Image (cartoon, rainbow, N blue to C red):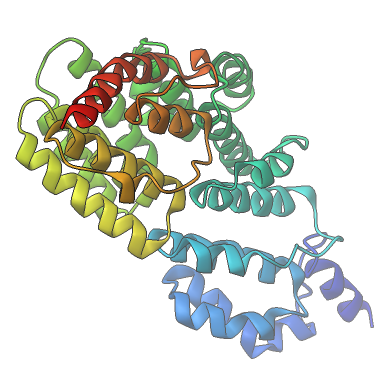
Length: 346
């Protein structure tokens, strides 16, 4: 009975596994341990029911599976894997990791209001879990137009969490402030996903300096495909299309069409909003009608303002919290007004 009791605690992450307990004899646990080295989404999905007696391993498997599905551009399936909350007896870290990954997926689907409560708890204790939680919270603040808060919280989080992924998230925030902290850039390069974000920030810096960022954008796209990383992939494609817009309109239109098709197919709804707006913007420049692209309700202040600009309307919300991105949309409004006047005369 002692071994069984110890294994029960081990299954909750609160004790070491017994040397000769029932956990050592369970085929499902053995299979899961083998899978962790070379995980496969469909095999993990089939194994989940057999891991129910082991809450810690089941929670870990759900996180692993959701991550695999996300990297396979299947965000809705990834979110479904995390629909069941972790066992209440687990330590805080796996619970908070579950919440931060779920919040990121909700944001991918344009459901930021549902994501925010998941990112308001205490910080995890483990460095990796804390970095994921902090970086996801910074993303929420940036995408909802709270740049000043993101910088303040980000600096505080980074002081407690000196991690390359946190450095990449904080670098993204400073990029919107038109700053480029070299130390953050160098540290972010050490993280597989952070490297792509760091190179993207460097590309935007070159763009602002009127240098050619295209080779860097292409390098970011290679990084995004190598991992793969859908978030980075969509950001890089959108950035490249916007850069090419006044310089190579046909290439920009081809990229915007690809982005629109791909985000519609994969279900990354927040990126689909950007793709629709980008496509509409490029078509407006050629005098085409874009009503079919603008028939949706944007989920973020930035995309609402961007849509209003394309329709020649004043944005109802301020964009100060988006930094240089907000200023770009405000400048775009003047072009939108001109487009609308041209359409009225045509």
